[in-house]
Image 1 (tube, rainbow, N blue to C red):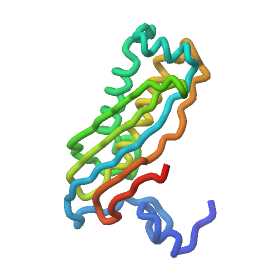
Image 2: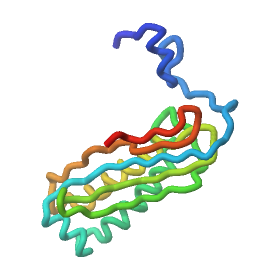
Image 3: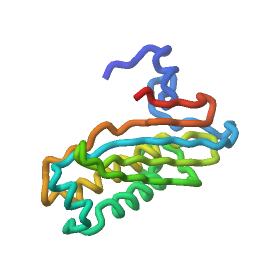
Length: 167
């Protein structure tokens, strides 16, 4: 892989001057209240969605299981993403709503911490794993389920301030 020039490397916080991956030193940063919201969707047939809503999926409570999986994943993000800092999260909320128009489920995670670094990766990981869990629980009845549009919706706190997605 071609190495980028030093100016491009400086913009990437997890890449040092030599172009090598590194964990960012956050020890001098003040602990502040930080929050991130991420969202994604799981698109499926109307019949599969009806199975989830009715509570008759063969593996059990799809939405409840996905909610717990997302919360657990947020707490373990630093074990999954190599350069993420382990954080003592103060809040993880997973809201999963069914949408007949998709048809499918919309998964939204809100994560909070009082610390020196943000929780965007924790929110994105929570959504990703919750979506994967929904897929796992319904794949026996529909292999064509799609996970789509996992993205950061909002973040607050820290030096970079408030970000809100334009869509």
